[in-house]
Amino acid sequence: MTSLVREIPAAPSAIALMHFTNRLTFETDCSDVFSSQEAGKVDFVLVDVRGPLAFERGHVPGAINIPTRLLSAESLASYPKTTLFVVYCAGPHCNGANKAAVKLAALGYPVKEMIGGVTGWLDEGFALSDAQIAKAPIPCEC
Image 1 (tube, rainbow, N blue to C red):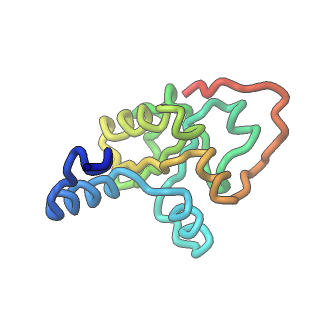
Image 2 (tube, rainbow, N blue to C red):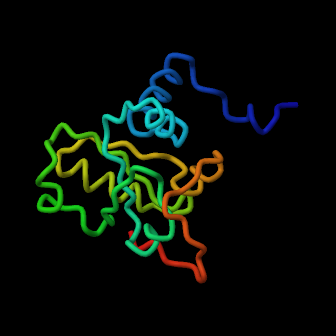
């Protein structure tokens, strides 16, 4: 009897290697961002792409706030095209970081998504900057 896991065979190792290596060119995780910050090796711009109210309620330390809808050639004109942007949103339930990554890539910037977003950051046990108690849910606005 075959398990549901094996019902569809795993990819050959060479294809799996290519797939998972390629994924890492598109994403990073909360732990890598945190560890880079702790080591003082921040060679990227961390961008919270949620709206300003959500950002005010709490964001990843070191992040700047540029809501997805405001990403444009004009708003990024001060950043060289070699700037690596790391974008995040509320969490895995939100595609705002993906939308922001599309915009940044279309503008010619290297970009990675910090998978997990705010939810992942908190799940790792890391604190948010300027965290305030939310009285009511705030839509992501990304």
